[in-house]
Amino acid sequence: MARTTRKASGNSAEERRQEAEQLHATLRQEIAQLRDSDRWAAALAAVVRFHHYSLNNILLIMSQMPTATQVAGYRMWQAAGRQVRKGEKGLRIYGYSTKRVRDTDEATSTDANGTDDAGTDDGSRIAVRFPVLSVFDISQTDPIPDAQQPEDLAQPLNAADPYDIAAKVADNLTAQGWTVEDGPLPAGIYGTTSHKDRRIRLSPDQSAADRAATLLHEMAHALLHADSADYRAHRGIAETEAESVAYVVAGLFGLDTRRYSIGYVAGWSGCDDDVIAATATRVLDTSRVLFAALTGDQAEEEAAADPVPVA
Image (tube, rainbow, N blue to C red; front, side, top):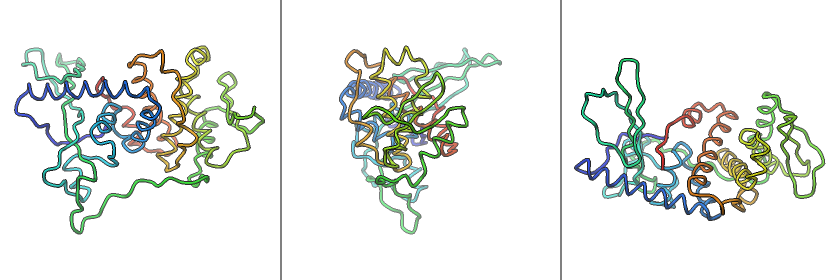
């Protein structure tokens, strides 16, 4: 989860609590809307842009500014050479902080989404809080004269695989004891994953970009869906997870796979909102782990391990 030191507005603990409760209600609405394929696609696009944030904060950013492309806290924008314009309204998200307290200490105010207290050896405990903070989109800022500007987002690519994503995925899988091979597959099937013999088979009749997306899809299956009985029972959700992970990781490399990856969301009809939220979180976390494995990006590994508030 990205962090900012900008303090929440509000003059009292009660005002901050009310604002947190409002954000919590917004989150539940956003999660329910993920049943719609177009909304799910929009959420995946937001994950690509804001992958260092928790799922909850990504959904909150979407709800307040669907056109946002790059967000950061007030001082982080200054450090990046940009100034938030006077009068701009911040996008409200959850932060993360901890405080060591003892049972004799006065209780501190908590947010609507709760706390997570962990005990320590000296009898104190670590109280976790999720305060409400403000971030701003790049469209709400102006360049600071003579300051170096943040780099643009990666541009979508065509049918090529200039970052050798397919080779990186195949090497990573091979190092984990998987076999990656080309072979004949039924029409319309571009890849298969067998956990029993740890083998991934690809159709050779694919463009370089499609081969990369297929391998990302199959590696997501390898990471997430080892239980074949569970896969058969929830095939629609499993395929949605794998397709979504492929789209997000390819997007982080700058490869646009929308025509291949996100044409549907399957299996939501019998699911409650908690299942949808859990699936979206699995997609985000798996994408981070997979991207970190392929790039050695330590920041992604740390983001994947970050605690997030429960919606």
